[in-house]
Image (tube, rainbow, N blue to C red; front, side):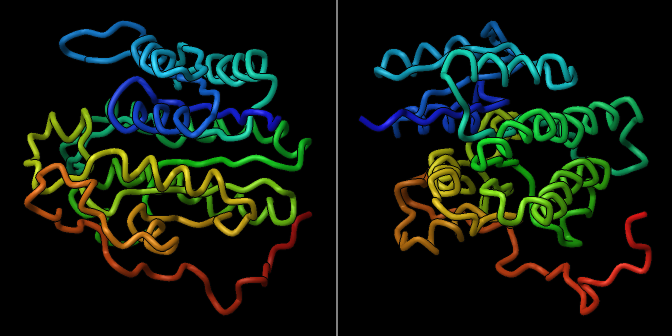
Length: 284
């Protein structure tokens, strides 16, 4: 009998993270459901316990883990809990996020600090904690939720963009260190708006959005890839699924009559230079 794989989803109490946890469970993974929210309220519907209950009700295996990503101790505990309960960990997903779409002038330092702490610092912490385990096993997938790097993304939301693009830099940079190790790191971002707690708060119409299943399906594609072909790549959900042969995306529509307009560019700039392998200051 094949051993069930296991994954940790940080930021899994609602929205996209919840769907990632449900989809991985439906595909046979044991799931660590980690988030700060432990109680569902009218203001914050959904919690780690409600998601775990959904998984268990469908016959899956899951463990709830309280995890405030501003605390490295709680991130470390989330990883250790999964390993202790599941015997190992195959995939680590960082979906936690803080968002304020505003200009530099109108984003207080306190709000920027929160985004920096939750977004790039939390992701870095998870990566540092899980990396030795994955390298020792010579296998493991790390997936962050952040966009490809391009100029338009910075406009009107520079403080937020700094903290998300920093996550993408982590992916591009660490990928160089992971070559031929059996471990890979990737990032994933949606091509269109995704129905979630955040987009509902923004009152986006259904015709502009897809269901979170598309993002979870793309995430599953990365996790189940047997090679390191996605190592260091900043991927888009629709484009990734198209590359595997998917052509009909109508099942993901939130409005059955409308195909959502793409919000992401169709092509992204290369970040490589001719002197890619040249370093005027070699490591001392």
